[in-house]
Amino acid sequence: MVASTQNADLIRRLYEQAFDGGDLKFCDEVHGPGYRYHDTTAPDTAEDHASYMARTAAFMAAFPDAKVSVEDIFGCEDRVAGRVTMRGTHTHALGDLQPTGRRVQLASTIIYRFEEGRVVEEWEIFDKLGMYQQLGVAPPESDVW
Image 1 (cartoon, rainbow, N blue to C red):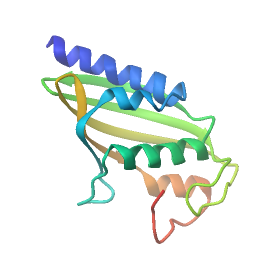
Image 2 (cartoon, helix red, strand yellow):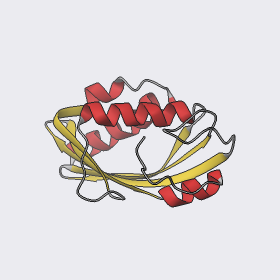
Image 3 (spheres, rainbow, N blue to C red):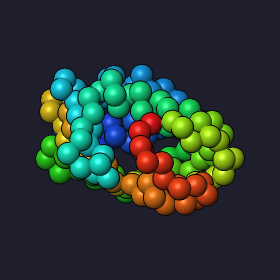
């Protein structure tokens, strides 16, 4: 189980360095060749590394004070699961959604799959509708950001 412990430690560093520390380039080191991100609220879609980076950068720019709390993280074989909570203030546009100035608390559960010490696939589920409700807006018809 050494590999799963090392993988869980890497994911913890990902949250600390990339998301809390603002160093999104760290994802370049964490993501392996052929990386795919699956947003489980949009079935049958997957993003490559470049698309993930663009969407994540847009989200982090919209919530520049965002901080992520790791609630749970554990690994088994080639998988790591994490339960995290992001808290931040919506002070910049998110796609077509103009800043609301409201604070949100957004819980996510993510499963990461590793190959050779790097993340090659992840599945995330988070309450987008709850985020829009906290922002006091209706979800846009095209939820792309």
